[in-house]
Length: 222
Image (tube, rainbow, N blue to C red; front, side, top):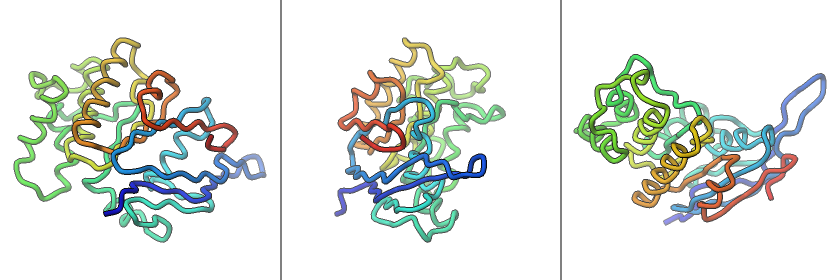
């Protein structure tokens, strides 16, 4: 059994800007083991979110390679990368990305609709109960606080029992007290399901809770 969730080799990302190439990431190589919690910090604009997008196969590098679940992403088209992520990868973002016209329960059921398992509604109910929102199933996002919306986002991310979770500034839109509650819940769920966690954050106290801590400076991973 392969114990490596993600591996990158000499990852480079450049974008054209003002007639020249701006290098965002330079020769980034890392290995993330299954079940590990990894934080990536750095100043705003250091390339943290760009790196996360490359690791998840949402974007393609200029050069270098990303291996996800033992599969090299280079050469896979968008549909093939999506198929590789299906049911195995979850996401939590700073902006909650809930669909306003769907209830909390319906938002959490969304990732399950792509799968073939039965009992989707019950799985979604249980996921919301795990984040303390068992009484808010029929509420719409505009009826929920910011912290409650992020709890729904966590439930949606974990409802498929993903092997890997990407979290991009998950407490960035929350006050400190609410952010602490959300981060505690995130790590409790990660530990419960032994999910590999890749966390991008500017919050050093949040990063300190991870087993491994990388810092991006000038496009290089330290």
